[in-house]
Image (cartoon, rainbow, N blue to C red):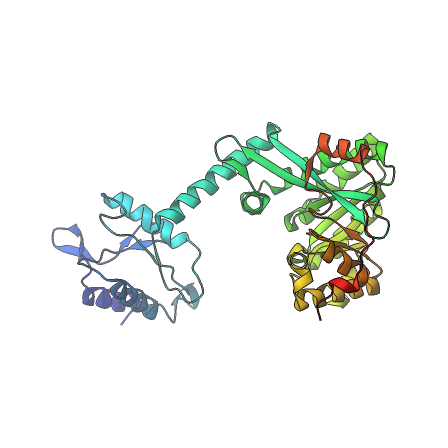
Length: 392
């Protein structure tokens, strides 16, 4: 018995609708395109019936379909839509089922039911993707800058450039939302080039007030493959007379893992330019110490999730202390994000963390406000009783 014969037998057993193609002939399953097929199951169905249906289909294709020793099908995705809940016409129902099928399934799920909320979010993602390129072209984006403070002297070391976007219809959209969309839609390189150009332009202004000022700029894993980005750095740095070593390039730990094969060569290209390199969100990935040592970062950033509750969490204290020890071994400076209270500041000082940023010092500021903040800045009092803030 062929796989299709077995599938037909199973569909007959669950009350599938025979789809007539001729007066004297019918089929149980219809071809939508080369990779999508559909069938109609009749009756008042419970979720358990749909689960049974999904199990039957997966069972039929469990060993896959081969032709002339070539495997044609080795897995099946199932999307389900319900009439009349999800549509009143065959076309609407089919579209909803296809959309449900394309949704990412959780581990262990055999099928997906069309979900109105997921559909709304998908439409929103499409709108964001379509609007993002226009936002870049029409300069709708904005950079904010969060100060970074030396934890030994209380002086300004520099700032981190943070991208902000206020969509005319959707309002403020956070980077955690639009950056992944930019990566998946192929706009991330243009987006990063905009950030780099604007960031270096503002760095030229900041250095007029603080000559040793360093600006940190984030780049995505996808940007590591962009051969035009190093050229843009060289062009903007020379054009504006900004020192290359006053720019810190931040890569997430996950980015270094994702592009591990090519990253050493790519990072060496940036080192030749003279920019500094930082590993961001340290502790959230799985890089080995040996691997990080080979890449040679100038700076290690402790993710704010380990700092926000630092005064009350022994686990977070252990992670922060270990990170400071690792950075010392690597010959890198440590920057802690998310400092919001003197207790956390004191603990980080004890561990040897050199630089901090967070609401304790300042929220992210628009460029003009940051310039004003610099002009009026007086050293932060960083003298605290460290021992008084440690958890036993």
